[in-house]
Image (tube, rainbow, N blue to C red; front, top):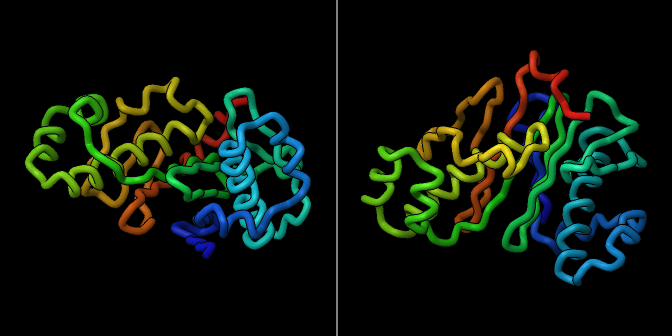
Length: 208
């Protein structure tokens, strides 16, 4: 089933499992998967399909062209002022669309290794998470990572921007970092989901 949220006016986030997303498949996206391994082609098409569904339902953009920047960030050359993002993990996919630069991240909740705790959390937060039960610790760490990753995806910087340096309170529903606001969204017990978006004054900083 495809689920669409609107956490802020005109900011839409859709989630689905791969099968649900692929029900919205647009054959125009299939040629781009030539040469991809099967798993990667399915992942790619699930992301593009969910994004196209969101474009049709939230922006009435039936035939929008979707391009990709050198960083891998999707963008809409025919729709200036409309920004998009895609993420996938563990058989689920998320897509976001909004009037300002936007990033979305979904992650499967697995385990919270000591290395990830040290990398993604300041010492006080890491210490607090170590005191929680393993399953709870994994869910809280996934909250941290999705907020960090969504934030750096706003301008297509990904891991190169060292997202683990962004301070995130795992118990907070929202937070901000350098003019970017992130929000935690509901994604079910096995996944964490976050969306981030730029403040109005950051709008012109979208990379070319």
